[in-house]
Length: 238
Image 1 (cartoon, rainbow, N blue to C red):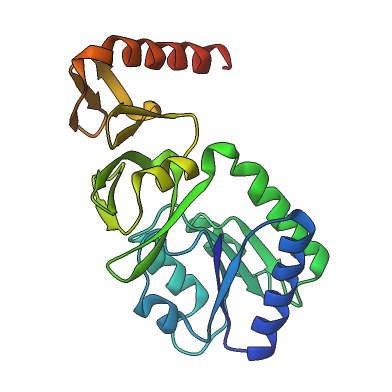
Image 2 (tube, rainbow, N blue to C red; image 1 turned 90 degrees about the vertical axis):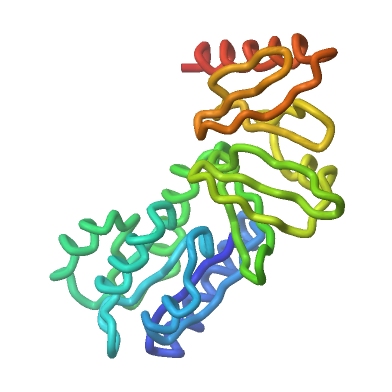
């Protein structure tokens, strides 16, 4: 999980990074942190799925944390934002940009742990991430947002629910090891997220983004039955 820490005070950034490392150790999580001293620094290279979580100070020179968050939300609805500040006065503004939490400085270890516990509880197993690099940018896509993965030699083409495609250096076998049981192989080198499938025949798989993916006719019936079984299980679980 990649986490951004945005604060114009270096000591505040370092202290929070240390707490996050402690949390990762306690919960056996793999995290990486990146520090920014201003909203402008964060936004300069920002792109959707760059970070799973952004800790954002409100009072900063230049762009405030609220202004920075509004710009993040213009292109990224999914990243969790946690504000840090010395005052309660901006709490209504914070939640207008769908912040996950609002911490009063100095942020105690207990408060940060409690916030992360809540966040990870909300992001269930359905929200596991696939991390990769494409076009010299790092991405962490929730598996629920991935529609399909397709082999392209030693590369992999990943398509998300917004119909964006990312080409990364990864083998199909490596990708399958990092996906979960909602993904099904429909043809050699192509796997689809069954949550995004709207129709299957023995030759074509239709997704909710409008993609039409080919299937082998010789095992299409078996694959379609597996998808139907998956749908039934999801419905039964509620």
